[in-house]
Every structure is written in structure tokens, then in C-alpha cells.
Length: 327
Image (cartoon, rainbow, N blue to C red; front, side, top):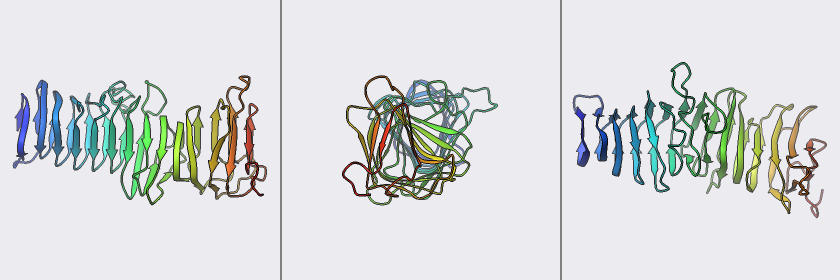
């Protein structure tokens, strides 16, 4: 079944012959409940859209301040693009989200993308751009699953020329978000985790690393995943457990110009004792001549003292434990 014009479904459209409903129009609108669909044209939502199977985008879909709910997988293929530029945009994917389509640099700038399954981006060998998952601005990706959710970003990098997260929120994840490719995954905005109960786990199965610009974390497990916090807001970094690292790894690095007052990290637990070349924590003051010192105060840390495995550069200071705490 194919539609060349607007699609406004009051009930439910099902394709009893199988396959996906094809939307071929250009400059058209879509809303309602459909069994499964593939967009080949250019559509704008003018109301909520519920897709009860796979949803394929080979053209353009603009969410337009609406909600898109997909009960299975979201697949952007060919030159397919998703436009989320409104703070009210919500895309809810109950399965996997696969970004193997056109460039989303400048098309994913706001709203919230919720993923209960895996996230994959790979345009290698396709002739398509490396920016098929390149959100920016206020756009936030949420992982909402309870098991292992895999992240596989092939064309990884920071900025408009690569694929990455804008903001990443793990507050509703109760399982493990696992980076599966041997590379560095970038969050160009803020990593947030404020779980209500079970702390989510960020892990790697293939020696990946994670670089984020800023953090707002109150409850998180980092499993064998070196984390670099690079220059952004250090709103909060509390109740974090770092476990299962190689003893030669630098487990946590903070690169920042500093502020007028110290940053306090509370209840950090480092479970792996480093060896030569490794460290629990490295602090780099990236503006050593600005008269402001990057100072990190660790309160209630484990172990209670770093034993020589806290490293500083650029004049940064690590108080471990913070002044006034017993050793």
C-alpha cells in the first residue's frame, strides 16, 4: 500500500498483505496509528504518530513538536533524515535505533530520543556521510532498557563532521549501556544520571573510551570504561563506582580550566588498584595561566587516600580526602 498525499488516521491502518505502508508524498503531513511504515518522501507530523512495527525513514520526517512512538525498530536508511528541532519533540523507540541514512548534523538539535534497545550508526562503505547520528544543542538521548543496551558508533568524533551524542541521559536505564566498538565515543554536551533506584552501568566490551564535555551525575557504575570529562560544566559527580579496569589504565580524567571554588566529588569508589602507568584520577588544568586553579575535593572516597595514584598537570590540585576529612 502506498500514499502520495497526507495521511490522517483516526483508527488504525494495517497492511494485511504484509510489508510496510509507503509514504511517498513531498511536503505532506502524517498522524495517527499505523501498523508499519516506510517514508520515501518528506513528511511533517501534525499530531502524534504511533507505529506498531518497524519504521523506516528513507526520506525526511519532521517531528514538529509531536510524539513519535515506535513499538519495534527505527531504521534510517539511504538518505533518510529525522528532524527534531522543537523542545517538545519526543521519539520513543521500543526496539533498536539504527542511523544509517543521511546527515543529521543540524537536524537533531532539540527534543528527546528514548531508546529501549540498541543504538547503531555506520555509514562505512556506503558513500553516505559520517554524520548520520550527529545531534547537537539541547538534543538528549535517553537509554531506557533494563538489560544490556549496545552502542555501536562507527564514524565517531566530536563536532559537526562526525557522529556522537549531544546530551546523554541514563537516569531511566536500569541495566548496562555497553560501548562495543574499539574507539572513543563522544558526548558533546552533558552526561546525566540521576537514577531513582538501580544505578545504571556504562561499560565497554571492546576497550572503548568515553569523552564527555560535562557531567551531572548522582549514581552511576563505570565498568572498565575510561572516562574523560573535558572542559564543560561539572554540575555534580557523586556516588560513582569505577570497577574492573586494567591496572595500567587512567580510570577518570578531568580536563578543565577550573573555577573560583573547588569542585566536590562525593562517594567515588575506585575498585581497581592501579600499577605503574595507571591512575585512579588525573586532573588537568587546561588554562594554567588564567589565575584560576582547577581543584577537585574528594569527600568520602574509597580508598580513603590515593596511594600515589592521583595525577595532576597544569597546576591542578586534588584534595583526597578533602580538607577536614579523616584519613
